[in-house]
Figure 1 (cartoon, rainbow, N blue to C red):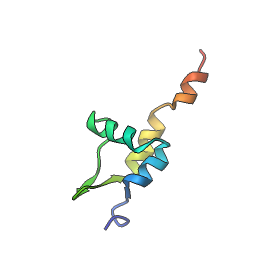
Figure 2: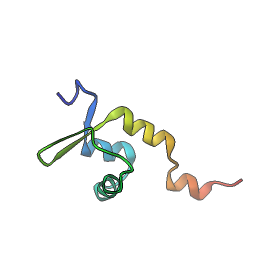
Figure 3: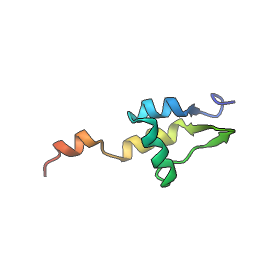
Length: 68
């Protein structure tokens, strides 16, 4: 079911986003990113949505090195 829908686990999402699980939990809490499905305590994220999120947001390292 997970792979057929293009969903990834919470662990895979944190790896793609290069963040800790606690950061992902905060982002979900504040509505920055939402799970595609919740099954019991497991959350699954749409891979395409996570990749779009990455493309649309600048990383801290990039922001620190940004100059106009």
